[in-house]
Image (cartoon, rainbow, N blue to C red; front, top):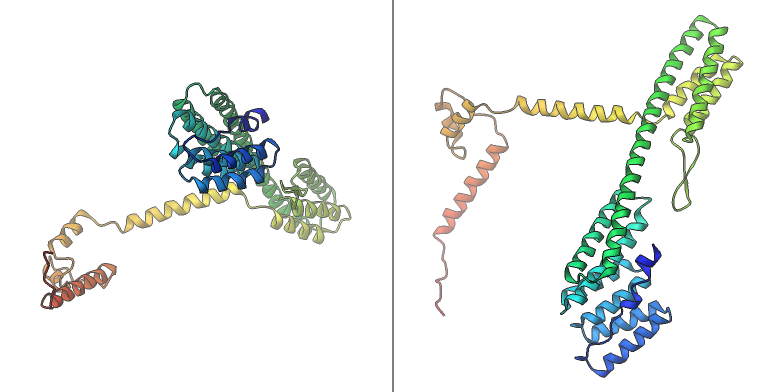
Length: 360
């Protein structure tokens, strides 16, 4: 993979066109030498100077992009390659520009793969398109053909990664839903045991089931702190719920029933909300909103009635239409009043002096 997206750019450097002067030729030589010695930042500065000396030189911008790419400044390199492609005078140079621009996007996509796989997929699809464009300009660009195939494989891998992540999230959501349901059940059972002052076998059974639920949380790994890509940590979604559940089971073993009930309630309160329930509530709200809008839809008969009157005229006309009284002032009324005021201002200005049009 490193050969595909890293090792080809240096060999693609361009020499200066004969149409430019000797001073610019020196800058090209210095820039190429800096790149060959892995002094990428120095090379970028030199080719930036060259591109200012000859802003119409696609070769200078192309080499600047190569230096920026080697400095891991992929966004700047992409901009340089894009400008170079727009000024390139040959299909071969345009092909190299699009090819290297595709490499910039691949590098960007690779850095986003773990944290934002969906965005990474989109970026890699764009890179694939650029490799195809490079091949359209120069079918002999074997590097573009090779990278196109590799990039397509990467897209398939990321699609598989996204599918696995979605399945994992669905399993996690189902687990959270189950845990919440069991905690609600345990609270009801513990409440009943307290009311009955029952500390016998029924309490022992509830203790065993509570420990089994805590074990399930432990096996899921959601009770631990999560290590983020930047090596910082965040609290696991079931960490507090797990702790309270274990405390509840320990209180049941004493038995200290009030404490056990308090810990169960705390465990449920600390548990994440059921994602499926939130989605269902959102759908219900959406349906209610649609029903609300339907209640206020205007019938064909009412629409015809209002069309017969001038909607921007005097509302007293409504009294003459089928005996319907004028409506209360609405946004439509306010808009009508504003339009009438605009018309009055136009009429007032009609008699004012206007400069005659001149024919010179």
